[in-house]
Image (cartoon, rainbow, N blue to C red; front, top):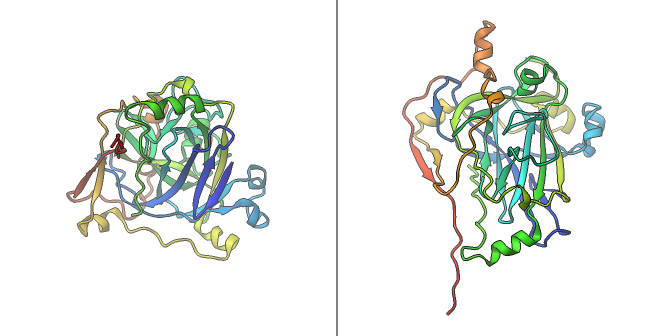
Length: 326
């Protein structure tokens, strides 16, 4: 079951286990410089406002009714990341325009042995396409039909756009064994609240960011493949969002340059106990937004110059405190 609550998607599987719950939020953030340097994690601002497609169906693209799900607004070249919350382990498949963000392969509802998913709570967030071990290319919104999105670059089509999410819970029997283990279950991952075109948008690869996509240390057989929930998350450009909802989208975030010059922090996340995936060859060959615009002789998006020195804050995983016998 999926519920939309306070601009977050709440997934629950009471038929599997009463504690099988997790949440996914879409977070507004800075667009990092698209200059082929490796940048730390940008801050998170507020969550994007999410709306039921069914509530505004008459004012949205016709094919969105078939997909159902939810939608939210983005400005062209705006960036985002996904925040994962929950202590019950879940396998979450994430695709952009039905291109898997971890493997670069065609999106699948099923879990694969080559790990086409991330694991909650090990993975607290996902900021982009997994291109190499320890590196992602940031999720950046671009109009469909102009050749920028990962979907268009890898399939040659501008058909789907948006994000596709599929969540599988851990098997109840496996979860109960974990709870009985000496260290119990990991605590929830952190959440930091920090031109005219088609109405629908997709996600293109932006700048390079240091982020590890952690390997599934539970194993494929830990997941209950008989239980799943999926959601199509549509992206509407900011102008059409006003027409559809009658409200304005959030203001554009400050530029990365403005943020850094103000002395505000960027972040690094480390977990020495987890092994990172190697990255996907298909995704590594994607052309970033700035590189494509440069190749076509067009000006890159504004507000994306190289940055001065960073103020970097190191983050790490939270661990439960075990309550022993008194």
